[in-house]
Length: 92
Image 1: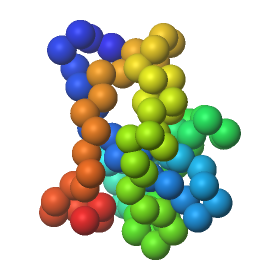
Image 2: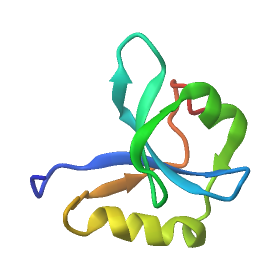
Image 3: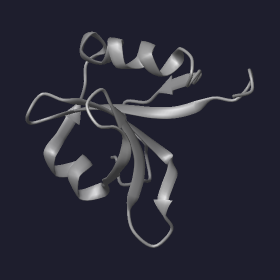
Image 4: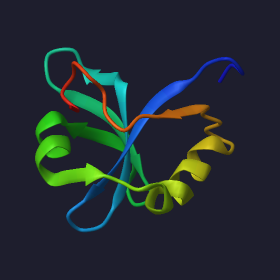
C-alpha cells in the first residue's frame, strides 16, 4: 500500500469472543450489505450488516491490539484509522 493511503476499520467482538476487523469502505457486493473483514481464524472474508449490528459489539483496544498489529505488518501493511462507529452507515 502507498505510504499515504489509510484504511478505515472497525474492530468488533462477536458473541463467541472472536475479534474481527471490518472494513466499511470495502464493499464485497454493491447490491448487498457485504463488507470485507479479517480475523485471526479464517483470515479474509466477508460479513454482512446484520451480523455487525446484531451479533457483535465494539472491541476494546486491549482486545483488538494483536489483530491491529497483524494487519499493520507485512504482507498487509495497512495504515489503519480505527473508528468507533461510522455515522450515516450501517455501523451506527
